[in-house]
Image 1 (cartoon, rainbow, N blue to C red):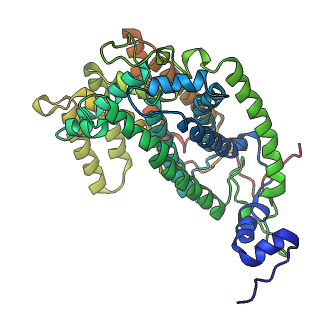
Image 2: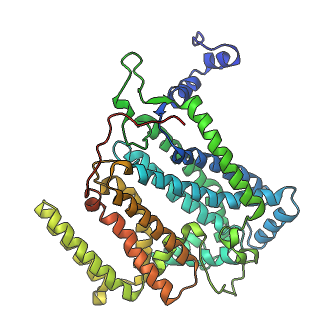
Image 3: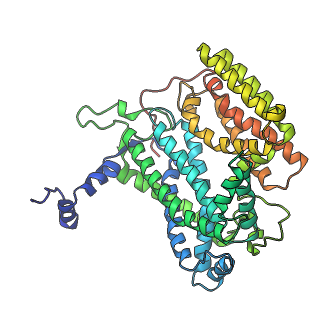
Length: 465
């Protein structure tokens, strides 16, 4: 069979003759992938997420060389890594600090999507893959959190796994299945180690590849929300408002990477525990099944959802039922399809009965689990909840931006109260925050269409910098 004809010379030409698909993919995803020319600093975080993923995988490989997934030796093996392995403290702190920075980068990446409407048509698949990546990251972080076998690791896993027991009928058996035992034990540690090191990373890498392929099929969004593929050069067929990703944005991202690494290593060398938010003090104490810590809380990136879980108490169910009734009436008077109208009322009625209705009422603990899960999964529905005529906040009414900032503040406040010990004030604040959190999403079909919108340009707006 003759060799493939190539335009390249030297080693690159030799490879291209024998495996031409490499250069085909290079052109498709780098040198001939045209990205909008008006990217700003918010677009650093996609590439930074890949960098942090590489850091996590690399440091994780080195950590597993000395870590022992055994309840008797897990804590001691971590101490051995920290004290006796050459550079072990550096690798361990890179991994633990990297986990927090991973979520910081991902949250900022998601905020950019909210800011510029990157989840809107035709990018729904990109957004769905992104949300699935976020769910995998949460699972990866949760399973990895138990591995140091410290006090907070042990009791945090105990509390979270016990939540599954609130599920009717299958709950208790499901909890035992997840733990592999009736309590968090050596069997649990081995299961979590297998999920953290092998199962979830494989799924995560697959989803990231799908996310990037979906992105490069439809093209990147931009701060204007303008589709650059709609305005092509008649001679070359390339977008007039686009530039090749390589070398322009690879160099652009190197600058963002430099700033990121300065911040990352500053935290790593001078405050890796970040005041107990990145690494809790209780996790420097070996796990003791007979001594419960005075306050159990997850790592900071889970605390907004944990706060929603804790907010769901018996009295709060009445407020939720009232809110659901009002929302069902709002849908009833908005929907045009007669069957859909009464279906909404019927479903809402059943749910309200299950919330507050006598012998059929379900445990508030179960509703807390449902709301905690819904608070994450609701992001997947954003492409259909947002009905705004403009994708980008640049061309929406100014109060839309303020509403988004209020949502961010509510998210941060929920996160803060999730780190604090339970108290009546914390409970009330978390309940108000929970209502505002869900109101932002559930009322989006109405508020996203309200106000006076600015005209969206046909071409991207760009100023050299």
